[in-house]
Length: 225
Ligand code: SF4
Image 1 (cartoon, rainbow, N blue to C red):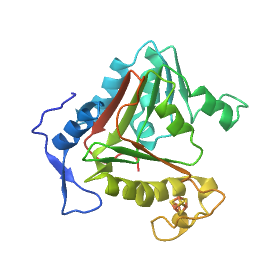
Image 2 (cartoon, helix red, strand yellow):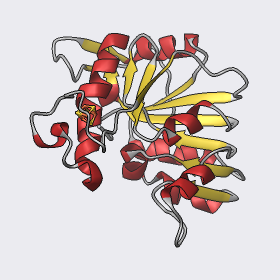
Image 3 (cartoon, rainbow, N blue to C red):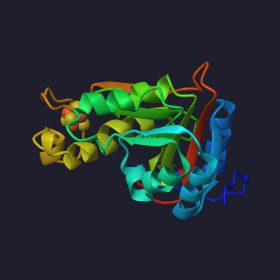
Image 4 (tube, protein in one colour):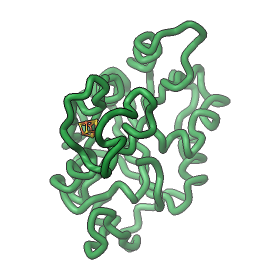
């Protein structure tokens, strides 16, 4: 069930086990920044919420391990006009063509690389399609993430995006497997690799002007990178 109860427990900060993260503080900070927030204890409840909440729409899913782990594509397909997934190109379609189809839909879903307890979110992108679609063109954008991505403040959120999320994303992708963060100790080397996946970093300070809804779905547990 969705829950924004201010008594929600604290979770451990993945960057510093001695610093607890308070979910209720995080939710309140996001709401001050005009994001709608829903919190779920169980991933199945989050997926069911999305399937109920998003219906009869033209929907697109950006690159997100979290959305894959939650089975969001399969949950949305029966209830919507069309669901475009960046991971499901049409036969013969180029990456660019699939990416363009994810833009300007009624609803766009993705995740973030980090969420600060002070209410900002951070995403890094290599090609920019995920960030672009999350900022403009859709009427509603949903960011779906686990509590593992919450950090104490914006500086630690940026640190997490660069030194935790990006190296893991680099490793998962065959093309970027030669990047230094894929081969060496897990951290960012600010590389000059042609397959560098960190070409833009976006901070979502507040809901974008003219976008109807930006909603953050927080799930208790570890999801994605
Ligand atoms: S800039 Fe290069 S080394 Fe750093 S995380 Fe990105 S791909 Fe890895």
